[in-house]
Image (cartoon, rainbow, N blue to C red; front, top):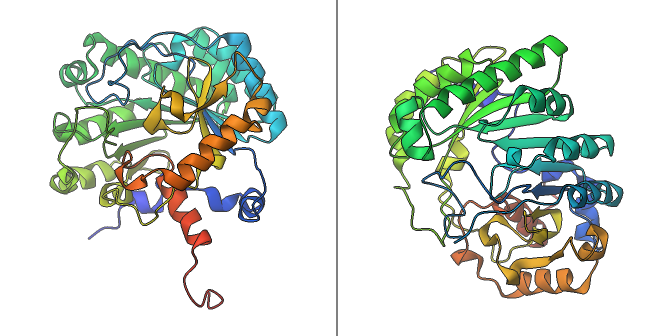
Length: 359
């Protein structure tokens, strides 16, 4: 049996890279107060799609935009505090915020690594040419390999499918023409409705000049009704292999098998990863994690009232983290959250096995 191309990929998107930040990790282990390494920022609460699997379907209203000046101030303050990376994603479509290019430029100029997660429809040429030179990577969420299935899952017009792939092709050509380092990827969330179109979507990604195509499992949000069978991926191995056969030196296919094989059960009893990663939503508030978007009890404070540094060093943030670390039942939390792999590492450090010197 051929070795899956995904195992040889230079990209690592299935786990945590926290061990590469030894200084911050060591400071945390000593009990010191630290600033996060990474922030997810949601410039827009609104979205032009209504995907069937959306993580924020439980929210009654999906609207609003993070003020551009507040966003730019956040980026400059975060860089000054030692935040290393920013992903524009969140509970809406980032490109709907017209100030996003300004923010990406400001964050890059401040010295942080920048990335964008988007559905790609609004990746117009004027925007694309401004943001791509400053992005380390851009990931486009596409849930199907045909316009018909895409329209049904994304709850949008079929023509958006062609628009997205034309935008990806234009971005890939612009990247090559200008020698940019930005990694452009297409991600498929595996669903019952799209499991038969994995190879078709991988081929579309390759034809559009993307850097990689990846398939991951659906992360179930406890507050939503939508769910899928946990073992659906076992039925897709033949398609996975066919998709992987499309890989070349310039195009990677990454089937996130570790992600699929992890049933979400916790080997840890506490959420310890909150100091390393935080979320900023379009309402201007900083939240603990993607499992509790918009929930007041999981907010550290508002950027419309205080600076990032004031919020992160403030009593409310410390109280929220202490409450979660000491009383939250992680075994009933959202499975496959962004803190999951971080928590596995941190729990091992806090609760080492016997004979650790025998490395």
